[in-house]
Image 1 (cartoon, rainbow, N blue to C red):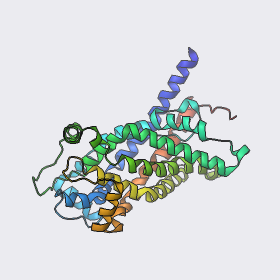
Image 2: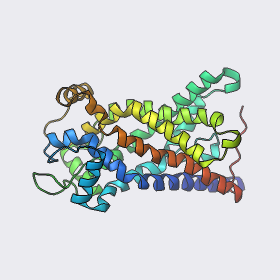
Image 3: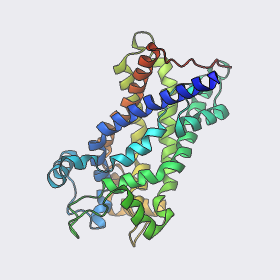
Length: 325
């Protein structure tokens, strides 16, 4: 009974530390993330008549959102993002007591399938196992949480300057679900899911695998426990991973915006063909510079969790790692 209580307390503390770091980091980055979504999807918004004229860049987008919608509009849809992000944070350690919610629970399971000993099988196989377990975990958790990402995207790209009605399309989170289900049903909430899995596999594989693999190599000696070193490592990884997977992210979000519309992309290849034909290849990378800044939120989660964990350990809430077999 005592062991069960200890495990439950450790699980709860781990959830609060990882989730708390995620909420703070994502909320802080919400303004730049909304700007990124507007820049990324403006081609679809213009085509659907939901935007008067294109944004000329990050500064122009910030200026127009602030002028037309007000300061709080930068956090539009953030509640869906927080709900989606909170249970999927990974603390990047190998302790079974620290398995939290979806991503880390799945990662722990897949790591038992794909993971291997670095000492026994070598660095490359150990690294490949980390990437494989991270990819599988990200893809599996996406199956449960994709609809929240859809809602976040629809709210964030719902600009008030729509020339047709002069009003927003959605009143809030529940209105997104209500209108989408009434026109497209459940498939409308999962439009673009296929290409999303490909992007998630690439991004989360790098995000989980590279951090797990690089942390014991880079954050050692004088850099061990250094917040800025941990932050820079996390930012570098999230930025690199984000740029590699960005076209996948653009395609899935462009497909999301067709839910509730009479004309939709027939497939991912159709979306790729139409976007490149009408807007050029660079349209797939529109908003990527803003996405690099969004990566600071991911870095903040990684570094922030490590710091919260050290503080908790100093106050007697440590998590003893399991012995490696």
